[in-house]
Image 1 (tube, one colour):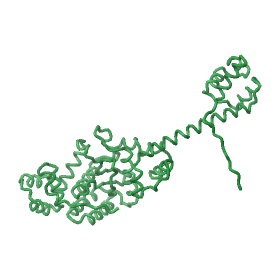
Image 2 (cartoon, one colour; image 1 turned 60 degrees about the vertical axis):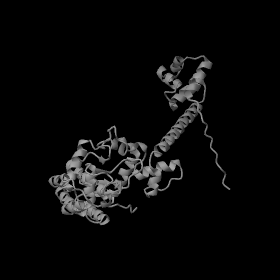
Image 3 (tube, rainbow, N blue to C red; image 1 turned 90 degrees about the vertical axis):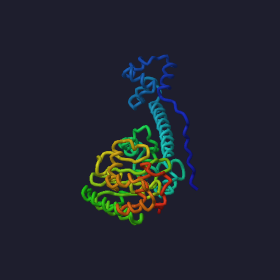
Image 4 (spheres, one colour; image 1 turned 180 degrees about the vertical axis):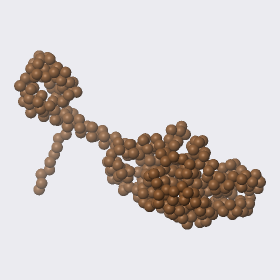
Length: 364
């Protein structure tokens, strides 16, 4: 039978400088005198005694000659002390990492199959790091933490309500999904043509329309994903550039209604067409006063329903179900889109005509 090995790890360690100071006191020798005997600077001896400098082998040999205490003892004390400090730092780092990992929506990520269920606190850290594809917490901060989120267009808004860890996790899921989609290089003209075809798809069955919209986007250099939001995030959609020739439109379908889904899609498409590639545009209920968000709203509204047509219809003040369906059919869009805009502009109550909207279903 193999013998068990036991290790002793004391919860304290005495710095060699403290022992040196006590030894000098017992000998009634000043630090300056010791420095003279060792042919070293008084500053070095002072730093060793105060713990700011370590005992190097050459110093240990000099102390042996000056004080009569074996050099190996000095080096042993130094090694024990440094090992103790390293283990204490390791404990603190482990606690910091465990506290960091608790910020993430672990259970939701497990439920979605994004990570394996961690057995304990340390496993949570590894699971999150693997999910983001980074080596440690500091690398995560540099790539997905505050540095990344500083590029979110409304990140510094006082009304920002999304949890940063939930937002980063949601963005990462979109990034991974986009990585699985092979796209052509982005071409603006082709994307605009695809948007006209997708507009017509809104009047069809949602499942088939979404699949076809994703295909059309891929052919023009845009990855389209629908990622369910986390509980701690207040999001509708986001747009970012994965590379100079590949954009990502990431939807949440948060309210599971076709009007919200399609308007969010065309809103994000506007960011691809109108705005820069260095920012991440996240659509929420909180940031609609931002100029870039207002511009995207105007573009999406006018693209879905030409401004003149909408003015004539909305000024008629006759918004029965038959009238809405007839106008939607004439425009070639889903009736729910008309209802959603009427509600948004306070033309009808939020409770009116919701039966004309189509409910979406999560398939995963």
